[in-house]
Image (cartoon, rainbow over all chains, first blue to last red; front, side):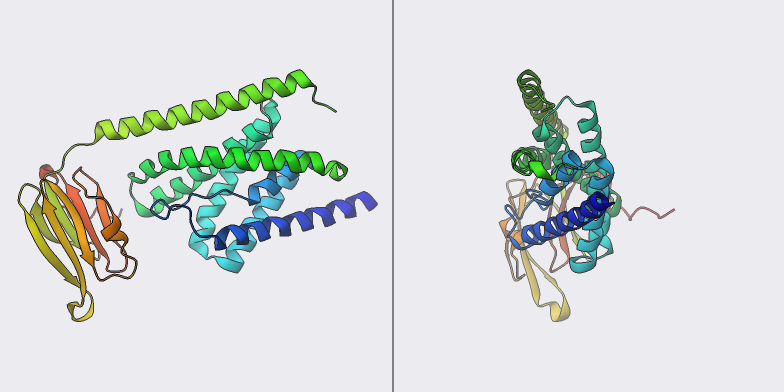
Length: 167
Length: 134
């Protein structure tokens, strides 16, 4: 019982950390404004940590909570559609890659970053009726892979440092 | 620890393979996109989603598109050597001016503040009506 309460409390704290990281990422200026969607994906550091230290159910809850709260605080229905699709696709890919146990946290994070971009581009194609956006996706794939490496390294460092968080 | 040294090494190798595979797929896609590109024939200027002007890419054009209230919003469009570009505009962000020149089918320059879209189209596309919503 005690451990369950502790778990809920820690997950709550981690959700708010993910929220703060989302906010931080929103206020730093875009790296290259001509191609929207290029970002590091800082909240994914937390998602990776939860995925490895708690499990996929917890990772899904923290991620979805983050997406909905961000939409409520800073976004609208449109931004919710984009981030929800990105988050779900990215999570499913990361859970699968964690399960097959062939990749390190960096590999899991790379597939998460790329799938996040793919999810958002798919929504853009549906909403804007333009397949030309597919071209953006290819550019985003390069930056998404790079972002995945950065997030993956940060995540694996955090997982090692927060050994005590093992539940 | 669940992970021993050799499995760590193997995973790291897999990570690198994954990154390389993803980058190679994206590069192949970009090449394919460039391969499928065809030179356009006309420059279509849409204002608020409706085509208002159409120029041939082979002629030299230097014109100013007026939009908005009292026609105070300006986008100066220049077509030269088969390439179209927006050389000056009164919009606040100037993204359209910063856009490189366009000449291939489906390439476009968008000025969001003025709702102006400059698009390259092919000869057979005609002055298409928007697709019907089913």
